[in-house]
Length: 503
Image: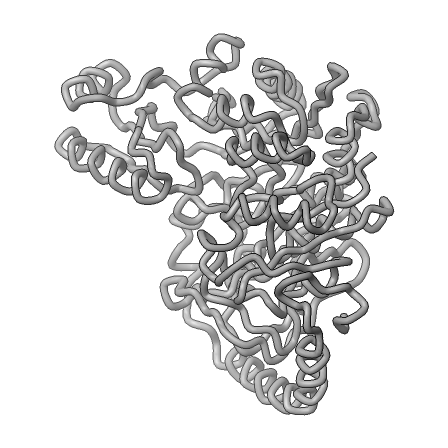
């Protein structure tokens, strides 16, 4: 069994992985950049090591430095979380060569599914439905026009090495085609260092539905049902829920089997996600595979009772999955909201800064995966997510009402957040009825962005004033914490033991 895990990540996912490690009796090692010196994952881990300056390409993306720290700390495994190096086949290979277990799939599977064109070809061979489009990279505009003539407009141009909406352009008119391809290629080159793009038929008003899968080295592959991820803004997920209010039991069974077939097609091992688009007539198409843990994994954990991080560690240790497919059941309904440090009412501008007050919700069926605390400064170098708020109910209505209550209780001052925006979605009639697709925010934008009432503003002003006085009284405590950290002579060179840092 794995004895010590280095978490090659930051923020809430690092804290999340450390929690499972602690329950399993496994030692944890955190790494941090200059900007994350006082981050919660640094305080919570058994040990913490500095790995470089604030920019991620000089710290969290520095695979060689992370492997060096793993050796120095005696870690026998690395958990990459999501983002950063989690889908980097070269890093996974270097871990193996260094004798360190990479808690994730084999480099070959990462490469095969990380390249979207190769993934499409593999799925077609495996009999998994895919959206009509190219099976090779776009080489010239003559080829582009020929493909578009065959499949018809609208089409979507996508980066082969992409994700998160980068390198993606929707084309509805023939005269927009050339500029869209060039823009997609330019953005793909900038974001991923690869300007390869491909073309798909655009599915109108789709649902974005993903299936969680687990596979071990003993030939076992299972799915843990679906997550509805259609509440998106600019291809970025905002709210997820499970079960999906859109798909039928029959469709769920078909998609689950297709997800397993997709994983088996690449001899996949570990946790992964098969993503599908589903049209209004319940036709589903393979979209892509994420060869890692997903941000929204907690809602699957909540309805199935399975700790996905523990299963990842078990699989990486060479053990079989701890349950059979027929033993996995969905219990109740779960919703996740992403709490972001941004101002939705000012064009979603990022809002880094000092958190002066934070009160996280609690109570039956509520879970918060976060890393921020009072006196912590959210850095401008990384994703603006503060936390993930998960609400569970016996049915969807109870889950929505519980989420609405939890959002009302969630108070953060010092930075702008997406909380009020999320509350408005919970109040929206179409959302409550389950009548939505990936265009939901666009179609309800005016309603969601309406000017706040005077009562809302007065309440917020009172909260800010109260938080300010509360913050002043806590400054001494924060200063003492910094003093304790500064006393360690070995902070940046040899790592910090947890006992030296107040938590």
